[in-house]
Length: 473
Image (cartoon, rainbow, N blue to C red; front, side, top):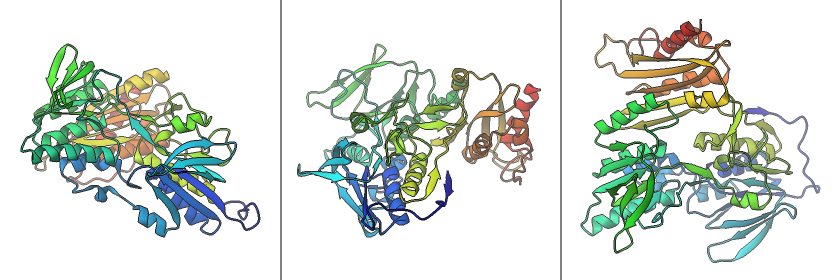
């Protein structure tokens, strides 16, 4: 993100009159935009934030850990409550849903929990409508006991189901997780830790398709070691319910799997219905297309941020939808600075992500092999085995690093890391190298820290860089 001071004083139209910013969506991106804009222009900007749910500014990434029992309640996931936003001068309307955006009239139509509607005129608009979990159009998908996990409300529904069964002195014995991406593997662990037998179904051969299959295989083996049944190559075709309407089984590839609860971990798609109806341009990924300032293409003082937008991938040089809180917060801040009279840009992403399942750490950045092939790159690839500390110290933990580099130029294209404690955050070194378009030779020569308790004398990332550089030569 690039932030610059404006060339001159900010000019507020209509003399000293206050302008209005309407923010649709009060989670990470929308709330960040509202807070930053109000902070930048506290007297000249009236900020109204509409949130249809019960919470603002919370960490959706923490929901699996709440369900697993590591977090005691939803309030711990909230970074800033509605009351805190109001004390900062933001008019927060909870339980209020935007039902229409009229860009020509510069009006947002909002409906509160009692069904009352209001037309809110705006000078500036931020669309932060987020993403919605993918829910397949399959027979029985609307049975009770089948949950997506995207919002605190979703997490609360899962926990309420578990609590209700406990109150009836019954136990949920069988959990089926459909989808083996980040949410899927995290929720599989959460269900296992709640004492259930867990089966995870995915159409791909190995879990975590953002990794190459050989790295996903390491994730599968770790999950199987934890007691989760992981079945790849499974095409789910429906759900059966008991007499009470609660799910009892999942059908996939000709086999029925008993299920007392089903978790859908099939990813999320940008929630752009409201924007599309207003005539906002959407990109090839289905997300809202913006410029570097997070301004909506072809619209005056209309911004879009967070999981409803698509981002520029600096490695593949394409537009992608990657719903992550890190991007959402940065994009919201950029939009808020620009609305408040400053100048800032969001220059894109490199596709960095990290997760943990059982005691295995999983990380990736840049392009995996399939993505590099689709982008048309020619490359070399290596996989190296190493440890998190010097091998002569007690209990060095294993780590596998896979790295891709472009033929000819030698530019780093991507890296994947799977290993035990101390492995995953090493991906940040690779992410920074990708951000700056470094070659693997340059990455190999970087002055990284070393001491035996933290790394072998050649850090595993540099060992991989050295190996792929040798293949390039």
